Amino acid sequence: LPNPNQRRHTVQQTLSRMRLIAASGAVERPQLADILSQLLPLAAQTDWWQEEDFPAPSGDERHARYLISQDADQTLALYLNVMRPGRRIAPHNHTTWATIAAVNGVEFNHLYQRLDDGSRSGVARLAAISTVAVQPGSGLALLPEDIHAVEIRGEQPIRHLHLYGRALEALTERICFDLDTDSYALMPVGVTTLPHCNLAAS
Ligand SMILES: [Fe+2]
Image (cartoon, rainbow, N blue to C red):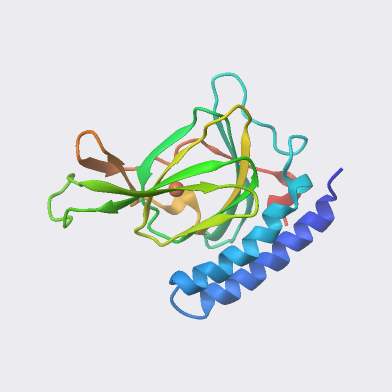
């Protein structure tokens, strides 16, 4: 069984190093790569993130999001996402930086480029750039205006760590895009973040 104290200690040590990176100046691609390189070893501790502490969604639910840690000022928020096949999240930005690291399974990330100049309210035209299969041992880093969509395929639930520069509940300006209508709208937070006592209380 996982050792919650060791997990909590290692998570907090890792977040401390990430805070130093984020505090050293602007978070651009090189700093994000450093932060992601700190997140990957946490995700590699697969026995820390399993069903006994973080149950997969059941019934009609396809997505469970667990809060692992969040700073008091709502910066630096770490979540475990457990998503079942069929879960799709429409293209969106984050308005803060984001990093993803795989524990189990593949999270397909479709990346997009915005083609219009943003001058027309509610209108956005996107072009697909590439699809990244984020799987164990790998991750993905996104700047605040990078746009991605998420898709879970296959047969098994996937478990991935997501770390953001600000808590999701504080991201009131992020937008999601509708590829069919070339439009965008403010993005709701989606599923409710679930607390996790062993980790969030520290
Ligand atoms: Fe996202």
